[in-house]
Image (cartoon, rainbow, N blue to C red):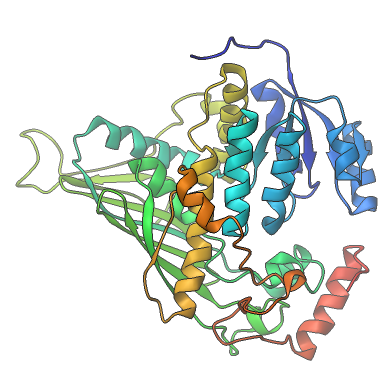
Length: 418
């Protein structure tokens, strides 16, 4: 039974003033009020705190003592789960950026914490909420395209070395060592959202580190060029996730059903949607192909002004609605964990010659018990026997060009660490 709706603004603290700045733009539209910020980069934290006129903290435990209702985790990719568990224990609702967890053991702890506390947890994966993905979900749920059989999600994001270095300050910044399969939620999430299916088995493949690509050799990154994850879904369908630094920037979603096809456009305005039915299968008078640009189903004008194709508005909106109603958001803790561990287990697959790996269902405590101590991770700070490398080629050492450029870019950013 849903809880009664609250009318007061939801007081929120944000961890991470880089990516976290985007929250401050859309928060008021969702009835949320920013009241505190937390970061370990003191100069940047102080500047942003002064601009926004909110209390700042460098100590996360002190931050959690602030009078607020919820916490948004926009800190480092591999640190979200422990921060989320602490916030839930401090009686705060949590919205966590990608990934939900960095190890399977962290996924177990996170699922247990959400269940124990009863607080709202939302996974802030924004790509499903782009207008064409929301429209594909609506069309699929109507049923006139049939059952999902095969899908593709792509997140291809190349950048020049200086741009990548500016957002990955420090030799062991997570962007510099995370294996190429891990950053997979932008490509997997839209397919899961549209079709209401979940991966149950993965095979991982990578294109190795390219020593002939200056965007790789002049950067401090040690991971491979890109990754492909083949997922077997729980309805028997297959999906392909492609993500990484290939040339040809863009994000695409393609959904093959047994009575039609949907995909966003690869040419021109990529926010257009194409729907196709075979001429011999369509109803009389129904077009074989339609191409159109869908609006957002609600709050269109607010969403078009938000980041990530409107996705940033809808993550805020969904989080606030879940808190007000007491109903779990669509992107709940279990979906967040599934999307995240798909990348972890795909890396295990890559290192085992792309053999298939089953994806456990952490809704079940009997399953979770098997993975509670699983801390398998390539994080340099967790070095231990049996921990994996960041590349299929082993441990790659950045060359002198990369180190020299990094020093220059990081100094310009005000970063003075290693």
